[in-house]
Image 1 (cartoon, helix red, strand yellow):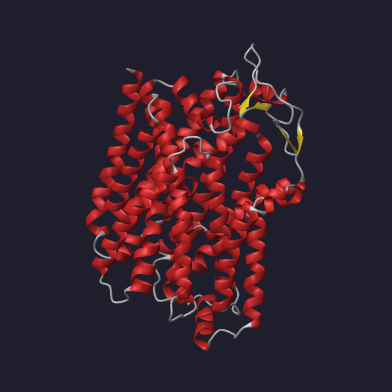
Image 2 (cartoon, rainbow, N blue to C red):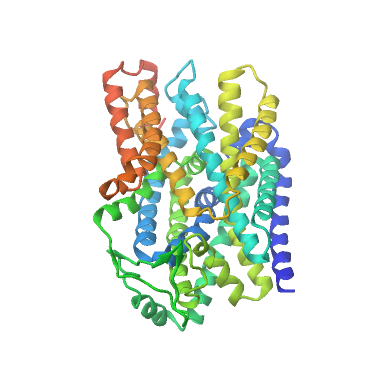
Amino acid sequence: MDKIQILIAMVVYMAAVILIGVFYAKRANKSSEEYYLGGRSLGPWVTAMSAEASDMSGWLLMGLPGVAYWCVLADAAWTAIGLEICTYLNWLIVSKRLRRYSVRANNSITLPEFFSNRFREKKKTIMFIAAAFILVFFTVYASSCFVTCGKLFATLFDTNYQAMMIIGAVFVLVYTILGGFLAESISDFMQAIVMITALTVIVVIGTVKAGGLGAVVENAQNIPGFLDFFGIADPIEVNGYQVAEQTGVPVWGGAGDYTILSICSCLAWGLGYFGMPQVLLRFMAIRKEEELKRSRRIAMVWVVISLGVAVFIGIVGRQLFPIEHLTKSSAESIFITLSTSFLPPLLAGFVMAGILAATISSSDSYLLIAASAFAKNIFQGVCKKNATDKQVMVASRITLLVLALIGVIIALDEDSVIFNIVSFDWAGFGATFGPLMIFSLFWKRINKPGAIAGMISGAGMVFLWKLVISKLGGAFAIYELLPAFIFSCICIVVVSLLTKAPSKEIAEDFDAVKNGQ
């Protein structure tokens, strides 16, 4: 009976999301601009909340609390701090100029199109490369959302992970095909509210059940390195499982060292924001540039509260359920365990909808942006330049089907760790597009060869560092985003200075945008 009530609550939520898609379907199908960018009609609240909800995904409600539960404060807190700092900087220095520049650059409606128009290229090389990287990284990114769906339903209803993951993927796919960017943004606004409400409810109830804030802190202090900003807890593992005593107490080693390099590695997560297409598109889609200031304030309040609460949920969960999750992958279900243990079934269902909200708000963004990268930027921009708007829309929907299928195949492994999948793709986007975006907006001398070099070097270094260099250990084990971001910046500057300066027309565009025109 309890599970039925939880299911009813989640079905009600899913029905509301579908209704939003139906409501905006007619408008979304008017044109590709409406479908991909909502006609640049977003208000400040929707812009802010949908940007953050689409960005955080199930990582916020499962990945981050799981990290906090497993080894606690250092990793989770420094990562959250890096994200908060760069969220603010992204809204402060990138948003207004990108909104203005995207209009100046032939009213660009996708990120690859903006980069291509920014450099006035005729052969669309930048557009093709940018679109290709978006296809690769977002397909894998979407798979992390499908993993979240599978873990959520499998944990709640004690059912087969793969079946539940596929059902979740189908739901996301239908919704994305139906409504496009505007429906996605409006529902993301609603989902952002659900997410932060769910987090707050669970952390308050969990803290009370644990005996209050003092009891939670005292328990965490008894675990070596658990609450140390410059140390880290060390779960003793055998065959991937944390050892637990017969008395039900998990076994810990001594506190590990947390070096400056480790801190820099976590803070580097924030650099990813400068290259996140789902966030940058919201900057482009807001109806008025002047409203971005209000959006920035709204976004920052949401981010600070949600990240802080997500980390604390992991700490509370470790006290209340110390041996419930003995693997790193299982630890990502602590939010579900807390919700189903302490809330009435119907309310637990709505809180579980918070995880579903996070997943939907991200996966629909990822799939839509990836589909636009192929249909708008490769199919129409490179392969069939005279393609009609209708043909672009058909290509987009076919691409959505293919990408969702690939994402499902990647997500079939139920032992996948959401945090690990997200961290690699985050690095990919951050290093591929982050430096290019900053230099495109603020450096007049950057040219087309520099832009191409920046993308290829950034993406290439992410793969090289992750798969080869990091295996050397020590200082080389740093998060791949940081060295890849730096390397991309160096390549942009060096190649741009060694090759021909931008044309007069490109320089005039830059000056016009800089002067607020």
